[in-house]
View 1: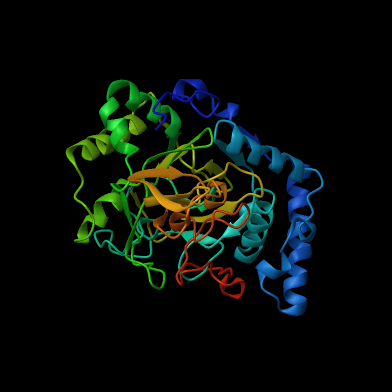
View 2: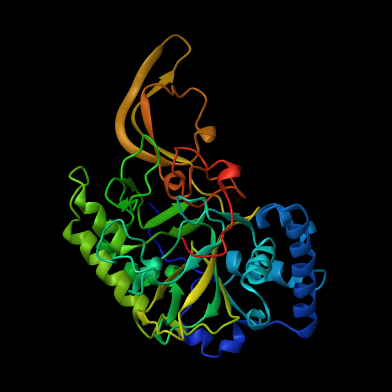
Length: 404
């Protein structure tokens, strides 16, 4: 287990980005003109043949952005392999109908990756607003409430938010480098860092979105090391709520300390960047290297907070482990098939990389990222919510103009 500090542009502190201009891209008049033209062409397509938005805007070719497109691709590269976050300003929400805004945002997202379903209904564009759900229920996803969302990451490579309208009060956004937080926890509390990387110890609650044949929870460690990459997965409320299942081990004192330290450092002025998204602002984050949070908010009759969300799977991104193996391992010799040794050591690499002499019928495998990423770790197809033990069928994926 390579418990050591991780360096690079994805490890940063708030002081590195005191000036929002250092991470903000403002759309030019030409960018907006291209965007509006692409929206108009796509909307004509939708109205002519009655096809849904996701079919009318199925690829970049359906939503051409000759000048803006390359800029968007570069921003995705920054999110994936650079600092892990970008902010885009100037999406013209005030000039667009709801349908036009959704078309434009979905089309823009094609330059960042393939949209993945936000929920068990197969929504490719999520609506982040208060629907009056009870935040105290373990089956409630907090994005559909006005309650604060603690520091966390989402179930896709990239997450993007477009602000349509602000709340009357509150709703501040924040993000931090989960890599820098990892480094700090490792420095000040090595045992807590070790606990955060432990296997068979951390379990996510599915929030009632349970695939057929699956349990209401699955294993997901916080610190995950694979092929030279550190990927952090953290949602304290999901870890805590999984404790409602008798089968889930109780969180140990070391795990509780790891949760406390991660949340404490993530929220500290040293690591956290905070910003209140304005209408037309778009946020793009890597879920592997960045944690984010949302403050509680209050709506009024005249002002309701409403954001659109994309979960995105790029065609190029870091590798993720497909399965972990545990149990009895058997090897072939030139003369016989015999048990070489039995142990419960975990191997974090895909089955395809196992040595050929290894007998595959005497150990069990555990899906880890496949559980979190909608049943697949294949680039361009991973991420999102699944309900039937497989990726949702393509015909089940769709776009709604209103919240669920």
